[in-house]
Length: 548
Image 1 (cartoon, rainbow, N blue to C red):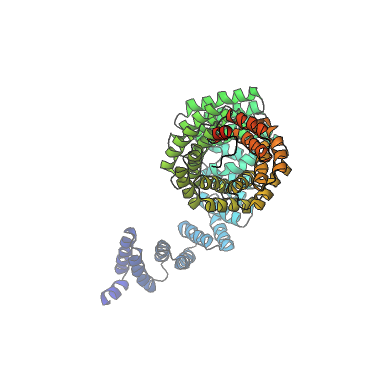
Image 2: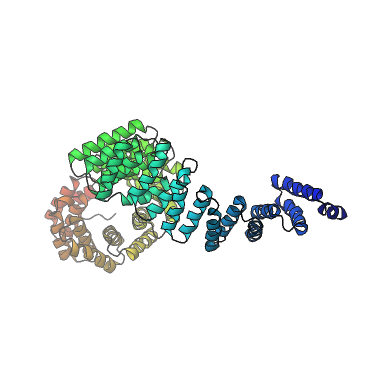
């Protein structure tokens, strides 16, 4: 301690202590540097350099209050120092003491009114005060430093874009492009606003003029594309989009996003073919980008070319990072194409990547159900149920299919609970109203409930044979044979419902009504249709109903 006091009392000792603190500072041992400099400044309180470096050390130690205290002290001790003044202004801005920062910077600018760093910081301060014009004036004073300080132009652009003056912002950007052809007219973080402003006809005219001067600036082509899309000018939008893609600064993701927007304008075969040519072009210049394979798939799907579309989806899904949405669409297309075996194969492949995706498990369960493997179907459906959330759009379908699977596995209580859950969410669900009432009729349970549910459907669909057959069978189980016969006659008039089951029911009702010959005819008709009941032969031979 006594040695330190002796050092502090001499000029040489003070210089040595300052250098000792600087060694700690350079090693990023800021706390030690602070200890040395704090002891030094107590002895030499009028030395601005010590206060300045204490401010920087405290900032590095994440102590902004102390940093601001010493930054203020350094500036007050040496008000003409540019470094001290700039650092003090930066700390004031960080502390949101904007008016004082403006006063500090304005005073600094009196010594060199065109200094770029002072004016950039002053512009930033004015922006925080929502004084855009004052910010622009500050930047104008530093204009001849643009080559060394591109931020001058970028800040100008920011202000002009905030004022919604796109063409003026682009004009400012020309200064940078003229100095360096690798520069962009706008920074990418300004493109969202530029995109919105580019729709105006007056802006489009200015953009076309700019494009003639800077044909390789893809940003201009992008903005022109948006204008043409707004005008629903499909041909010109595709031309500009091709030009934009020639600029390697334009990311493939941007090209893909705008391509999808453009394809929304397709409303005739000629436009579809133009779009198809563009999609193929993208595949040649972006061969490693799966999103363009997906776009090609979308295009084929839009023309109802499901198999071709699915082929491109599969190529996209198997390239690069797997995408859950693409796999889900592939499997959905399998169902639409009635390719159930393919749905199983694709769902199995997708679940390798996304085992915790409830919808994929649901799709797998549904495929296995359609293949007749109810036990396996239930395994996947129960996994899906554990992963589902109340907001999932497929919730109703999940419990609807689970009701059918539980029924097939003779788990009637679980089947009823699944169906009740669906009806709680959607009381008018047609699949559940029909199947639930039919399964109850087969079990001869709660026939009044079955009749109520089934009647809802025939009141809405008076000519739907499947629903008429279900209602008739509920009536049959209630012993209302005449009424059941009336609805079965209506059911067989529906050509879409000419099933073996309907004709067998028709025969059963006729038998109960004592009309044996007619019953035999209906049973024989049922025997000629696909998937007849195994008891039909016995019924015909014994000329009576044979219970299962």
